[in-house]
Length: 469
Ligand code: FUL
Image 1: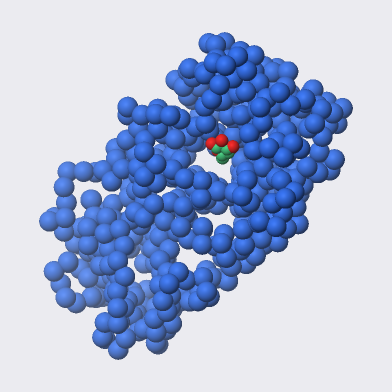
Image 2: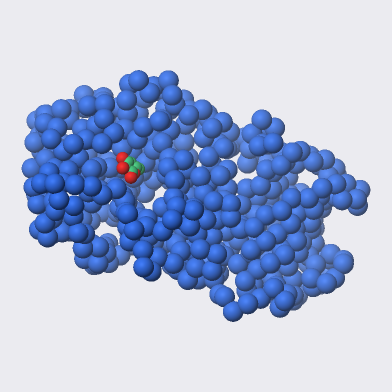
């Protein structure tokens, strides 16, 4: 019997694919900061600002600052909510399209400083960055390039304003884990559209906060997934070729963003953003339209379960608190994940490998001992007949994403009782299927570019209602 640990170690080292399946394409690999980003898996988005008080989704930028006045703002409550939900970080709208800054920026007169909140002495970024640090959460900011308030918007001066705001944020509230550049771009107060100096902005990140991962339609570090439903493509390749494309209007087609480029040259994984409510900002009349734990679980399977990350928006209300109803949904979502993935039935299983694709037999790794042969396919054998409806596969993506096609065959008393097929695996692939009562299953890796690096396999019996039929 080999333990999961041994299995992980072994199979990472081994698996070369048959030469027939090879071509010259080589998977790019993630940078260190992208690798760390992948491991954050699930985190919260928070849309908060004047829109929270005006019941709008897109403020015009003409809202009086005085309307921003949360009565009970408590960033510790936001953080404890995120922690309890199993989220690893929070990304806040430091500035949305209306231009209002949640910190007292020296580059704007449309900020918390001009508001009534705390007599203009408040600073949401300061409170939240501190609360995140104390709670052990990552802290990220959404900084909308589009600004419907700033008088310089639409002129070259605005590039200095935006660059200056980024510097302020990096220097005063860092470390900033993720910088979120939204793609929406319209007219400013003078009717002009801005020509953004993206190179300059990217250089500010490199200079002031090189460990920050930057999200946008085309990265450079993380790509938009092409929809706002939180759903990654199937397949989902961690690659994108952004050359020739721009952010906003000139972005790659949404299906390309959704699935990535099959033979892409840049590692650029997808982040799935979605709101727990219909809107991004809090609206009292949406309190009864919060997604249910089951809906959130389904999104999790179609985002994290397809190798992407999930950025779930949970907007604070006009008191400056996450409402009880959102907390109930988040708690239920966490419970479903814990119950579903708490008992890995493959822990007690034996693992066998097929030492060459043309072999018909599977052998225990222990009996051979030598990893690094032409190994790819493997078998998981349970000690007794076992009911499962979910298998989780992982690739060791630090070596790239190489598996292109796989098939899982289920066996009951040595007879095949069905199979499922898949394409991409990536960091985590969660496969659900109608329940099978089986003795074993075999995973055939049918196509890969370069070595395949399956690093983990797990099997579960999850609540039948969570399985898409
Ligand atoms: C969009 C914005 O226009 C929405 O208001 C929201 O912030 C969403 C996450 O991104 O592009």
